[in-house]
Amino acid sequence: MFGKKVESKSLGRIDSLIGAGTRVEGSICFTGGLRIDGEVKGSILAAEGASSSMLVLSEHARVEGAVNVAHLVTNGTVVGPVAVTQSLEMQSKARIVGDVEYAIIEMQQGAVIEGRLLHSASKPVELKLATSA
Image 1 (cartoon, rainbow, N blue to C red):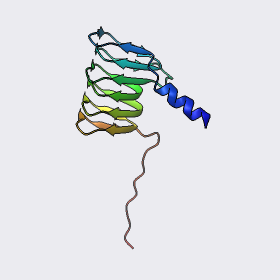
Image 2: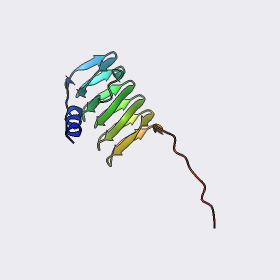
Image 3: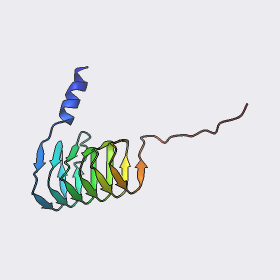
Image 4: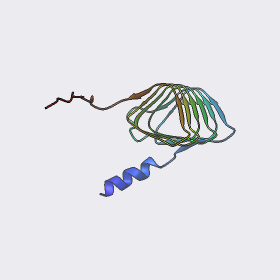
């Protein structure tokens, strides 16, 4: 019971911030939580084994490059492929131009994806044909 509360608190924690008006060129590798209010030209990757990594993109954020994280909450723009191993939350002004690989997705009205949606399940889904009696 207490373990779940600790996990949820660590997920919401932001360790690093790229502020509004800041532009970063190059790849970013991080652990914990990263919030972007500025612009990044390059890939954003969570460190290997960082299953609790969280990337938050504000309404004014823009990322041009690949994104690969465990959790993504976005209200900004991503131009490039996105791979989210656990959960993706797209708020109303979010826009992704590129393919999106996800396990769980939540999209608010107004969010846009221009690309393919690829569901990545831990085990394949087996479909069975209905038989008539």
